[in-house]
Length: 109
Length: 338
Image 1: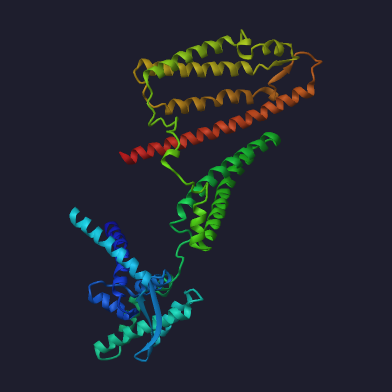
Image 2: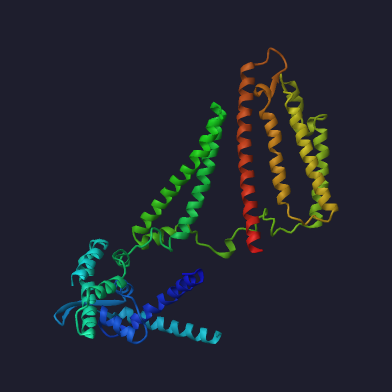
C-alpha cells in the first residue's frame, strides 16, 4: 500500500468510526442480535466487519446506550440488543449534529 | 464446525477472563447463524477451503479479542497531554539535578576523564528509568479508571484552570517577536561605553567597585593572586568585543537584527575567564601578604572559591548547551517552514 493509500485508508476509517455508531444506534430502534443487525446494516449499504460490530455493541451497552438480553430463538441462545431510553436521547442529538454537519459540508462543496 | 471451535478457543485465550464465556457464547451464536446462512445459500456445507477463507476473513484471534479489551492503550488520549508534560518536566529536572550533583561531587572529591565518561554513560539510563517510572505511574492512573484519570489530569499544577488573562507576558528573551528600537540600541551602546570605561578604571580606583569597603579590603592580610589579572583583561576583552559588535550593528543599521548569535557568543566566551581562574596554580586565588596570615582560613577560602567556580562553569556550560539546542531546533524549524 502506498503512502497516499495508507493515509486515505486511515482518514476513511476515522470518518467511518463515528458514522458506524450512528448507524448502529439508528438500526437498533428495532431489536436485533449481532448477525441480523449486521445483515440489516449491510442491506442498507453500511457494511461492517464482525470484529468491529460485535465489540462496538458491547461498548455501547457498557455506556448505557443499549440494553441487551439473552433469549432463545431458532433453538439457539442469542443476545438481543435494543436502544435504551438514554440511547434514544443521545441518538436524537447525534442525528441533529449529523444533519448539521451534512448540511455544512453540502454548502461547502 | 471444528475449525470454528478452534477459532473461538483461540479468541477466548486473549479475552478478559471475567467476560470470556459471555463474549464467546455471543460470538458463537452470531458466527453459527452466519455459517448457516452461507450454507443455505450454497445448498451444501462449506468445503474445507471455503471454511478456511471464511475464518481467515474474520481476523486473527488476537486482533478480534483485542477489540473487546476496555483498554487498548497504556495511556489514553485524555491523559496523554498531561503525561507528556510531566515526562518533559521530569526529564529536565532529573538532568539538571544529576549534573549539578555530579559537579558538586567532583568539586569536593576531584574528577577524572573516567568519571566524566561515567556521567555520559549513565545519563541515558537515568532518563530511561525516569521515563519508565513516569510512564508506570500514568499507566496505573489510566488503568485505575478513566474517571480517576480525568480527575488527576485536572489537578493543579498538571492542568491549572486557565484563563486567557492568566497567560504569562510575551517572553522578554523571545527575540523572534521582540521589537528592538533604535533608541534602545543607542542606549545599549551608550551604557556599554560607560560600563567599559568603569571597567578600565576599577583597577586604579577600587572604590568604584567596592565603595568604602575598598580600604577595608586593602587592610586585610590577603591579596589577589596573579591569575586575577589575565581574568580581568579577559573580561575587558570580552566586553570590548561585545561593545564593538553593538556599535557595528548600530552604525550598520542592523540594530533590529536578532541577537541570538551575539548572546550565544558572549555566553560561550564567558567560559574563558572562568577557566583562567580555575587553572590558577595550586587553585590559589588569594595569597597571604604576610607569613603571619591565617593559612588555614586562606586555604578554606581558596577551596570554597574553586568549588564555586566549578559550579559556575557547569551552569554556564549547561546554559550554552541549552541555547545551542534551541538554536539548532529553531534552524530546523525554519528549514522545514521554508
